Structures are given as C-alpha cells and as structure tokens.
Length: 323
Image 1 (cartoon, rainbow, N blue to C red):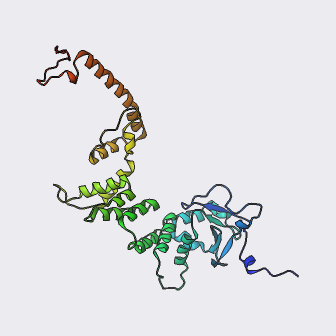
Image 2 (cartoon, one colour; image 1 turned 45 degrees about the horizontal axis):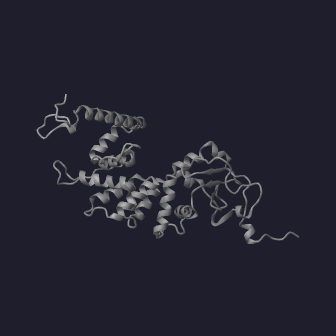
Image 3 (cartoon, helix red, strand yellow; image 1 turned 120 degrees about the vertical axis):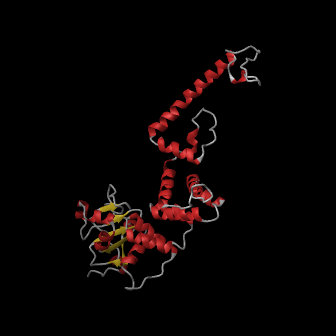
C-alpha cells in the first residue's frame, strides 16, 4: 500500500521544464534557470506559495525558492516589459509545467506587488509600512508598472527626505523622483549640511548649488522660477562633467584651480566626445615640454620675464639690453 505524501512533500515540487530566466528589464538571461540541475539537491527544491499558487493561474514565476502561479493578464495589461515578454516568441515555451524565474527580485518585492492585484478584501486599501512602499516601488520601477510607480511615490512621500529622493530616483531610474529631490533642496531656505553633501557626492552638490544660484532673486534678470527645463538641464550636465582627477595628466604637475561652474559647463558641453577628451590629454605633455624649451631659451638670451626690470625695460641678468 502506497503511503500518503506528507504536507511538506505536497508543497514541494521540482518543475521539469524550466522556460525563462529574466532580469528586471525583461531580458532573458542566457543559460538554464537556477535550481534546474540534473542531479537533485535539497537546496534546489522549489516550494509553492501557500496563498499565491493559484491552480487557475496561467503562468508560474519563481522568486528565490518560491513558486507563484498567477494570472498573466495583470502583468501584460499594466507592464510594458511583461507585455513584450509574454507576447514574444519566448512566451511559446511557457506551458503548464514550466516557469519564469525573476532574477534580482526579492520575495518581499514580489509579494508587495501581489498584494495590489490580489487584495485581501475588495475595496479596502491596506495601510502599508515604509518598507512595503519601498518594495512596491522597486518592483514597479524594475518592470515598468507606470501607474504603480505613481502610487508608490505618493505613499513614500512622507517618509523620504529630499536627499534620499534624489539618490533613490537615480538608483531606480525614476526621473520624477530625482526632480522632486532637487526641487526641494533648491527651494528650501537652508543649504546642504555636511552630512547631506557627503551623501550626495560632488556632482550632485554642484548641481544643487548651480540651480540655487541661477534661481536666486537677487541676481539681475532672474525671476527665481525653478522650471523643469532648468532642472533637466542641470541634471543632464551633471552626468557629462569629467572627474576632477582628469584635470592633471601624469607628470604634468599639480592641477590648477578648477574653473567656475558656468565656464566648466560650457567647455564640457562643447567637448564631451571621447576623441576630444583624449586629444586634450595627449597634447598636454608636448605643450609642457615646448613651454620648458622656450623658457630655457629665454633665460639664456635674457628675453624672459626675469629680464624685465622695474622700469619695464627688457634687461638680462648681466644688465645688457635684450633682443
């Protein structure tokens, strides 16, 4: 007589036909999905979620070591990433006994999303903690759930300080969150604290300082309006400015004082291509040698700066008139 499987055995399965493993950008990852080795190992066992493994579902996702069987309509309808994936040729491999592995996604992030499409009670919006809002924002931004990004940003608004908004917007690739942080930092009365400056980094600090200066009402011709165009231009400039270390080539002595913010912006915008940058660096040692030869010749002939007396006449070190 065959013994009945235990509860643990009923909840542990090993799908035999893995199909796809994708990054948060929706691109398939080469090679077989994790946990599909031909030799069974206990740590490769996948466990169905007790609530979100829905028999009537038509797609199975694997997050970490947990199986979720859900409905594709929620994913394809609201996410451009999943819409493209599930309608592509790769989707033909997704069958009843195969799955899609979400690489780089945590269980907390995925379940924060599932709590939206499968609410505990219809018509009741649950109170979410800060971490739950963060997890929802991370998943929504990774897979381009546009409406959920807006919802999560509204939920996080009271939790995030301006500096974190700027940094988190950059990290998750959400321009509107980055703009919110920049705008808040530029319009408040107090400037950046030392701790905020260290957290932001030099380029972000210069971006905020530039915008605060350009929109100050005390400047002639400035009306103090911080427009989206100004913010966008300042953020774009921040991304193309070269590091300060590149100002002094090896062997050329210490770098001179950096130019003013406006001058640096103009020069960078006109020479942001790699070829222009490399040409500038290659010409510097030759120029230095040439300048050294000229200075040596001037010293020998008495025509250099050292040969000028207080009366403005060119004189060599021996008092004779130079050429």
